[in-house]
Length: 318
Ligand SMILES: Cc1cc2nc3c(=O)[nH]c(=O)nc-3n(C[C@H](O)[C@H](O)[C@H](O)COP(=O)(O)O)c2cc1C
Image 1 (spheres, rainbow, N blue to C red):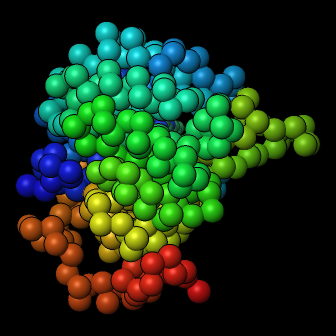
Image 2: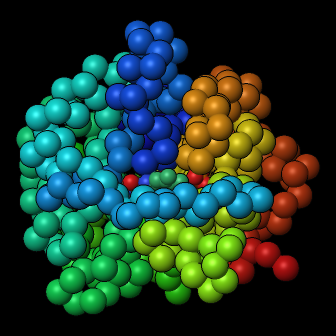
């Protein structure tokens, strides 16, 4: 048995927030989903204080190596989630991690305080990719903002707090270090990279209803590997690595870069059971105790190991 911040996990693969709708999957697959749930923990889609309808359509743009999404975080809001989603997600056979986001520190604090009381919730993931409307700064793009956020929410719960880092900033490692110093139990990365696509028949007009969106899937895998290596070299708390994972080999690479646990996102849209196959392959590659074999790291010769164990923040590529 593996653990993440004290949460027991049957294996090292979880889902990336917003990419696997466990309630819809249960409707589609029935109790068979519970018997063979693909992930070792379930991370719910971002919950905000108020209900959100999300962005106008179109919300997805498929690209050669992944997609750009501009979903806009539609959700039922805190009250709706507590009343309708939480009871159903609590039936899943794995620990529940609730992902939350606020537009001010006070909103994040309200969400954290509300979930702190719920025994169904094993941990909280803080989606800090959002601007603080009071300061104009993205909460996870600036170490000072992240530190202030952690100071506001850390006293509100003893549950593990996982800070989900954004790649759209100068130094995710500096933000991770600030999160750790101010009480985060783990960090997860990467969230999507900002991107846009033009309408195929209206030159210069954005395709996505939201204008721009977040790039995910194979296109971001190399970015994820670099950032996971850099962050892992900088912090001692556990790291959840994600970004473009499609195979056990991709998951293994993130592990070698320093991730304790790996999350599967976009790939689940193609195959809802991808997580299970990746978990099996990763466990087989790492042996029963899950400790990576250093010989295999050398054989992989990615250069990532050297970067991960070298000077903090040193470039790992090129
Ligand atoms: C359609 C879609 C919806 C997403 N929704 C959320 C979300 O609600 N909250 C969040 O923190 N990340 C969200 N993400 C980001 C993923 O959790 C993940 O960080 C990112 O997609 C990189 O992993 P991947 O390349 O395996 O998809 C979403 C990604 C996609 C593609």
